[in-house]
Image 1: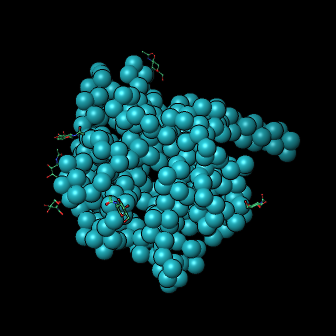
Image 2 (image 1 turned 90 degrees about the horizontal axis):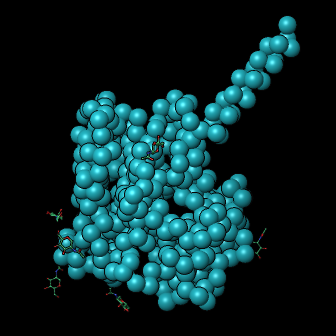
Image 3 (image 1 turned 90 degrees about the vertical axis):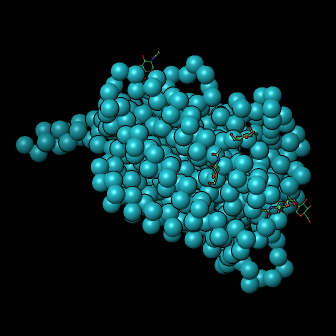
Length: 372
Ligand SMILES: *[C@@H]1O[C@H](CO)[C@@H](O)[C@H](O)[C@H]1NC(C)=O
Ligand SMILES: *[C@@H]1O[C@H](CO)[C@@H](O)[C@H](O)[C@H]1NC(C)=O
Ligand SMILES: *[C@@H]1O[C@H](CO)[C@@H](O)[C@H](O)[C@H]1NC(C)=O
Ligand SMILES: *[C@@H]1O[C@H](CO)[C@@H](O)[C@H](O)[C@H]1NC(C)=O
Ligand SMILES: *[C@@H]1O[C@H](CO)[C@@H](O)[C@H](O)[C@H]1NC(C)=O
Ligand SMILES: *[C@@H]1O[C@H](CO)[C@@H](O)[C@H](O)[C@H]1NC(C)=O
């Protein structure tokens, strides 16, 4: 009697694996709707760029070289966290909203490289340099969503988003980077944290009001570990660095943002018990990469060095020699690199983060726990 049971069990496992890898049918999600910045953009900025933002380096190789073989508008060598999430749910990669004529029935991506949580007019009113200087903020992306909603919901009534997975973020990273690149101090940025988190929280409420039932909310990276920040704010004073070599004060700002965001998520879960809000993390896995690079197949001697950059150690980052310029080359083995271009991570890192969002421990609850 053992053999048939064993055979049945095997068949069952095979069926599950097929369900998981060939996609379709097993998951409750039939679409993904994404809002965010360069950690999520799958092509909006490069479509926006022509002809108003000439010289965008993101349009050049080696961006995209690893998986696609050509630049796609993703700010990395290959795929983003969202691409791996979509794949695991058996869904296609989300087309960018600006790709007119796309079929958005299995998802749409509103994320734009550089998008802040606060709007352009407001940030520029604070005399901050916003790059690129376009109206792509969280609020602007929600306006796009509202415009598209009638066609997304065509004939589906009020439960139009019952099987959609919304992904919000990250947002906030670009607001803080605007402060730092405009020569403001961390102390000058800190009073804006509640306002930035509030803007994300209000965005989440808007999605709930539009009928979102499942929303993933991402926290922000440890910006003090990014080569661009490390180069811009380089200090001879060793006490400003933590044991990873990251800038303590910048990361403290990030943790403050993330703790306020977690409080808001708690409050929203209480206020909207019929919407499942998943708290997803970029911050913690990044620190795990620095702590135990070998566990993720990363080279421990290059975790703070830009793969696609110039200038050599300690960060291989030069503001005047950005990735995408003809003379700037990518490192030989991108799969062992953590940092891609000074602001963004490699596909290897994004794959590991996606894994933590799908299965835990970097999402609460893990996405696959609610997908069935
Ligand atoms: C859009 O894609 C869905 C499957 O994702 C398909 O069922 C539908 O027919 C497509 N619509 C058009 C107009 O191609
Ligand atoms: C921009 O943000 C400010 C501050 O939150 C707000 O008062 C203003 O109405 C916003 N402007 C636009 C055009 O959204
Ligand atoms: C921005 O700069 C202008 C001109 O230098 C100045 O008048 C204004 O007070 C500044 N605004 C803020 C918020 O710093
Ligand atoms: C952004 O939006 C504001 C408010 O709608 C507008 O005044 C401004 O001209 C826009 N800026 C750009 C660069 O499109
Ligand atoms: C910040 O300071 C640097 C060095 O002093 C200067 O070159 C740069 O133009 C300044 N940037 C802004 C946005 O003020
Ligand atoms: C890790 O990177 C260093 C510096 O680029 C290189 O010398 C070394 O060979 C790399 N290690 C492995 C295992 O590839």
